[in-house]
Length: 145
Image (cartoon, rainbow, N blue to C red; front, top):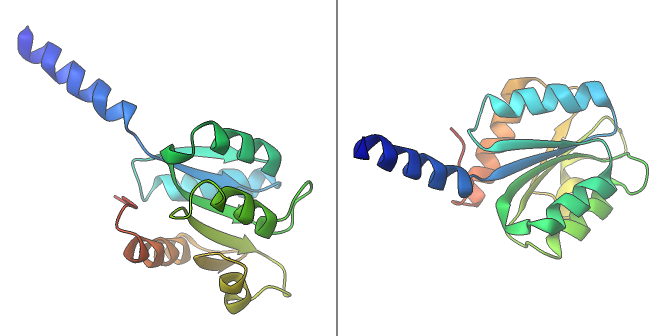
């Protein structure tokens, strides 16, 4: 019985420190698909938001829990660059991947806007995996599975 109790305590402690990855996209279908793809690459909790303002509120409630954000660029309320700036106020080490279907945004421009990686929509899971590897090597705290 004591072994089971110890195992339960250890599992509870692991859940308490579980990291979170955030997806922000105003398109519900893309949001769901991106979250499902991310779940293939991590055991982190995937938190999905259609509203950038809601994402900011959730982030500000516990910024240290988040290690990665994948965000769209063109959204109502605030664009991806504005979201990136807001989140970095609380966590400079946060890794943020930009996704967009806009021809006006390139990988180079995304980097100058403060993003760590860029994905042109639509993107396959393999491209997301490559972007995750890029930010993982830039930050040893990112734990992909």
